[in-house]
Image 1 (tube, rainbow, N blue to C red):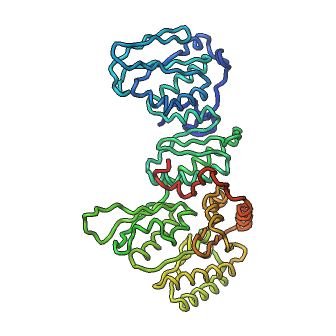
Image 2: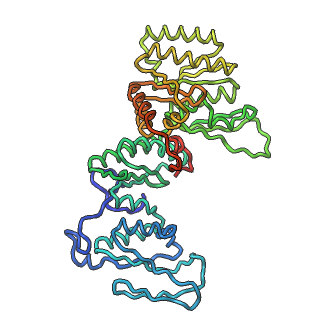
Length: 450
């Protein structure tokens, strides 16, 4: 399924399309094509007037980009407004009289000619692109193809899973030097400005993107019924769950309820990879069903559970002592260690102690970077290079933007994360009047972020 964007490439998987001009020079028949085929290349196509907006775009911006991408000059024979009037269009030796009708706001289905000027091969390609775009294809897919990118269809067909895939593709884009985009039907990978993709690099990027699509189709969707008296609308920004949002792309959605209906509970959905989603549901249940105060400390999946037997026993004894001293409970999820209690202050203090314990027991795999500035914390939440490190299965990072302003790091890449943090520290602040700051990585999780 999907639009016809060109010939599939060997080794790129089903539906894969590479960008770039087809063989053959401008103004001559492509190598191996019969001259008759070149002579049949159209000089124009007809599209319903109501579909011209897809081809032209705002202020003809799409038309100009399509012209550049197809290496053809493209002109639309617009009709005049006003009954009984018309105009004659001359183009490449052709003449067309456009009969005008009553102004219908551009909703007419009357055919309008779009003229194409270029070599035979380019005209054939441009005609196919124009007709596909007029029929509803995303012009950006065709432009990406012409600029050396890769376009292939996906069948996720679920807004939250699509949002998760869009978020996960950000790290892929940094690693493979491509800009990524996921629409409702297609995945688009374009070389970053000033870059180009070799055949091997394109294959690697596409394989990684297809793996993201496959993973998005398998992520879990769980739910709970939160008590309305505990303000479950705050679940989407719950501090204990926030590290799972940044690290694993966990999505929390609170159902809209009828303001006029009297209800005691509201549905909360959690979407994400299995282990983090389950841990998020457990923490949200403690907070918004049982009314407990909660806090969390990220770990690499199963990190504490994989401690050697002797170390695990000592750690368990220290955890029990911590629970008794602070009057909290410590829970061991696969992706996070989390705490519950009746006092917010006690839970926060126990969390700090738990971080110190983990740095003692797993000194080579746990690191707490203190004393960050709010501006640096913001950069860490936006930084693509840090996001690429966090995408590795053995690296987790949690940025605490509270009064402490710190970063918690676990896994095998603590040194690399520290180096990246130090590099961001050295970057000068943005000057006044600079373009708007980058978006945070987690902003891609919005279903409105297309």
